[in-house]
Image (tube, rainbow, N blue to C red; front, side, top):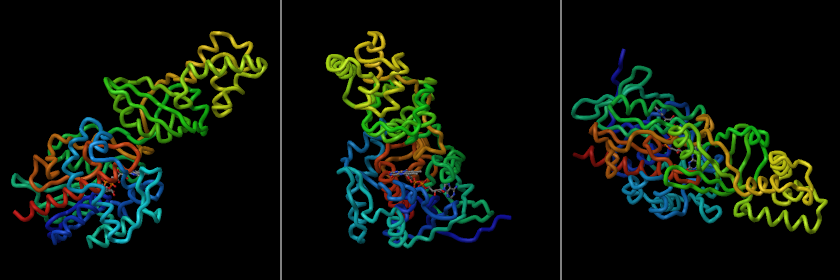
Length: 415
Ligand SMILES: Cc1cc2nc3c(=O)[nH]c(=O)nc-3n(C[C@H](O)[C@H](O)[C@H](O)COP(=O)(O)OP(=O)(O)OC[C@H]3O[C@@H](n4cnc5c(N)ncnc54)[C@H](O)[C@@H]3O)c2cc1C
């Protein structure tokens, strides 16, 4: 039996950064929304973000920030203008939440606690968050939204809904449920794929190095006319590669492999050191000390296990610099300078920190984030088909889009 219990002007589905920011914007217009959260605690992804420290933004200007979201990035302009990082920083600082900049780029709360951000939004919005409340339907007729239905049979009446239910990434916290709600109302879903996730590599030797780190490696991925370069500390895993340079490429890699099956990824073991560098190095060592093992020469720049693996792959596991064959020398230098790997995808979803794909932007008005299909339905955050790399992009987008969706819903309710 369905029970119609209450009426709210606006129901927000999801208590992540997008939902919290929408609630704050509504509260600023004296509108009291209700947040419904299916899990037993609010904002669990926000709390897990940045290893519990929450990298909530970065220093990039509007254009550079949008470019990191790919070709669709310009969709974000209205939201980023309405609620830029300066707004977020002002909000934090004016409420005594100090922030810190890491590597002159990444913003974190100075306390190192994501929870401080959640507490501040909850306190300042005064919003009621009901946990263990899964929305299973958004009720709408030809004139627009009229309520939501919960898994326990409860119905709540409302004139507007902000769908801030996030994506399906990360085991236990992510879900397709919000995406399905939008789909059931006629919104098109762009197939979700893992992003900000490890890269999957076919070559077995990569997995044999699991646990080993290259301190400053470079990856290159060609996708159509676009070439993507990433650089930094790279970790070998049992199924491929992880660490910043890998995570940053994951969305693009997943989408490329979805279209093509697999793709070529170029790994430079030491950024900036191409085949010519390794050739010069081996030549120099041959003259200085021809009895020195090739693998110990490489170990000056690479972890020992990586140097040994490269020599084994190039058929020179025990070769000395003086006895290294021309073929092995050429193979080795080409490999160390830019080794071609077979990329088979990214993921799995259970280890992905973000989702690529989501609700198609075609049916969302970027000026208000309102659905073009259902009056009174607004979108905020990761549920939309926009994904940034690592580095505070996705949480800033959630806060900015949440604020615009909340303000737009307030305008809608005033009509
Ligand atoms: C481990 C980890 C670390 C991360 N670190 C960073 C970082 O440092 N910086 C960064 O920018 N990004 C980071 N991200 C990504 C970032 O956390 C997300 O992009 C962001 O939380 C998205 O915000 P959102 O509000 O759109 O969705 P979410 O935070 O996912 O919130 C959506 C909420 O809606 C709820 N919900 C879903 N469906 C329903 C339903 N039917 N009924 C009721 N409730 C529902 C969900 O349970 C969830 O709590 C990280 C992600 C993970 C998993």
